[in-house]
Length: 66
Image (cartoon, rainbow, N blue to C red; front, top):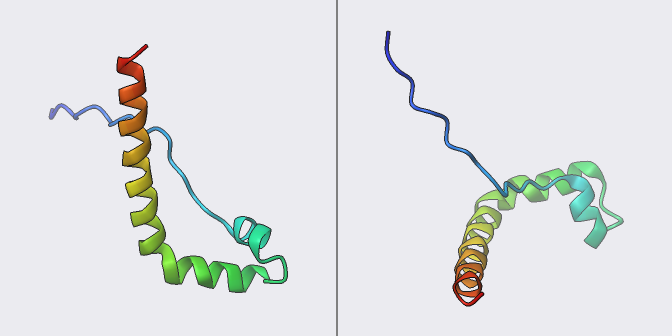
């Protein structure tokens, strides 16, 4: 029987939906919002990762100075 590696604990996950886009573009219907998210998914993910690393770095510096 193979031992399975423990699952990696994932935290601070983010996802976006049509309602989020509609807060900035209230006239857009769900289909247009979803199409926008699908067309821009890679760029949104890259930006979230970059900003996430910035936040982690800032918080670690803050943690060291407590």
